[in-house]
Image (tube, rainbow, N blue to C red; front, side):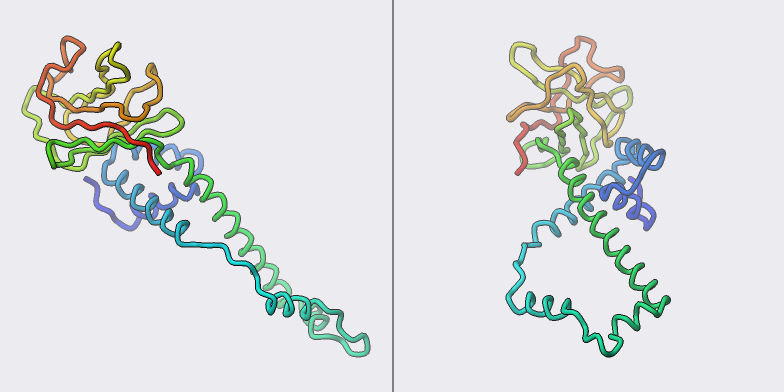
Length: 232
């Protein structure tokens, strides 16, 4: 697992905010699949920003504030140059004010963009894979059809064996393999030929031969399993 160093945390936060572009964004997405520590850091940032959104409530401006706004926009007496006129003639001051306004507008735009991207990044289905009362992994299914498995604990994989991930899209079709790994790690599941996961869909991890089940069906012991539930 990768240590949560400062660059590690910064890249995860920038990814969640949607500030990465081009190769930087593509690199972060590849790292999300291959680096479980980075994936968990991304999830922590998503949770933090979601808390900010939930804790902010709109407030209407009071009558006193409107009176102050109206008073501040009243025309100055024409006989003497007003303070605003002096500031207008003071180019350094006006330049500073313009920069401040631009920066505030930029922060607002970034915040709105991040809120929109955050909604898109939230999973629509989640399955916690357990063995009795011990959680081993979680599957996040997104609206665009992607699904990612995040390990929550280490899993003992003997030599010559592998961990195989399965899902049950329907009783008629039976279990379908959606991923194979030699150790517990973050894994993007292969669901391209399957319908998007629905509520109460089974996911499980079994211990199979190194190349995967020879029959195309689970043959080894089930290590962890769980059913999807719709997120709030």
